[in-house]
Image (tube, rainbow, N blue to C red; front, side, top):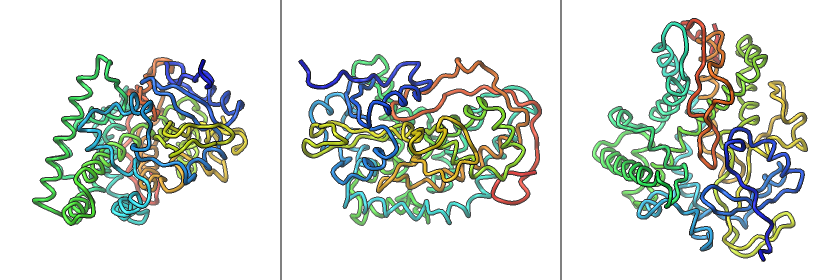
Length: 421
């Protein structure tokens, strides 16, 4: 008989639609829980704000996949070879000192001052997407806006050439959604992987032929002078293209769903755009697109908040559960734009804190500000229960968001950091 408790299943339509009741139940039981994911892999989930902060800075927990034991590897390492070895050695799966060296190569491109200087360009991108909408009526905001705006911004920031931006297939972003070896969708999954890998190879070759003053060119140069290995370069480009835009797409959708479910908050924000920076922080806390962190591992059997965890078992932190912890946030299940302080963990914590956090904040402020300014009378165009939440294990978001918006406005941005008429 197993010495472990029966795992809690972290999947299913009800959980995906609203995981917060389960997280509340788990927090009440304690900080560490054995859970099972759709792939069948069992892991240890950390809930609660204080426990999450401690786990995210615990030097005993490493992220390199070589730390995973055989039981984890049998089910969790589902990306096949050679792609697993060639695309999975990016920053999220590195430990110091290698993590420190690799992260240093990208931080300047995402520095707050640099991305803030690009705000006018990002605003042009957002307005152009909305200019293309009909004067009034109904639209899917994912297809019309949220799926495109973050990718266009990312292309500007990293130096993705226009021809490669046009070639990028958004379906490639689905390679982070688990498809096990026995899943009937496995051939499509593997075809996406191969297509994305060919795209990355072509992009690296193009940047080597015609380098510029941009992040992608600097990463290729780092490979050519020996600071990066070939797999590390491909993995970092993979991480930029997928993790650099899909989470922002998802966060735009979770923020909009929250606002549409709380029309009084939507009206409040539409009436006072100066609330946007605070509102974005609260929307990040309230329903984060980064629901769970990626795997962490102990090198030897270890204790975590009173629970004995075998070496190589995966430890995952629930950022969403931490962000709704009533021990840290008063009235944690309420959407409150006046919440202060608001030390949410939506971008993680510690050495793996999201390097693109400043960019994501600007994108969210521009996206929400522009949508509320340009699309008055925004209302859901489908019942809430019909929203389809993406099947990704670690992320939250909807793949379609039908809305009615009355008549499209055309007010230009005239001043300040937020959209205002």
